Length: 284
Image (cartoon, rainbow, N blue to C red; front, side):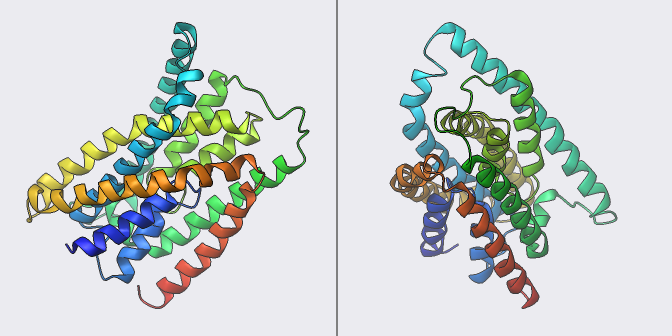
């Protein structure tokens, strides 16, 4: 695995992670263009480690905001913990159910098939990007007319957290269906204040990432003939560069949400889905 390619992928991941445009879809497409196999165990581990790098960037960036809101008191932390448990549990249930259905239908009769085998299918990435784009457009355009004096509610209810968790579960099996784009958009449509739902969405991502990393590390250990060490070093290098790129991009990227430019990301996703479809039609 070329370190130069790993660093390039890490920069793409770090720059795209906080935009609701599916950083994983961009990385998968970049891998395909560079002749790499996105569905291989080494590549899926790299992708998850790149997410880990941006996860640490998110923690560094949002820590002060989380401390002022979710960790400001025992009561606030207890409420946040309850909402996070509800959302994460539903994410796991919905995501795992979809994964099992796909593995037993789409891959029926294919020995040792796993959901990661879908990651190299651009014909699935393209509609997933389009679906995310439509959802972001709806949320962004519906929010444009909101009264500036009434920007939404700060408190997130159990029901609202449940909806966010379910939508997050729908995102897990599909590269291209942006997790942050979908969860923040659904929060906006539930009239939660944009900064609040953004902080909650990325807190859920931090909770979710270690489990995904563990799953991919175990998959690599069982499936790869390279061994864990061969893929681990370049993945760690990628994680470092995705962390640095994420820190550089975070402040500018997250500010777009508050400036009413959310729907731009929807337009981008729709255009990106067309590009991905064209690449698929040309044999990538």
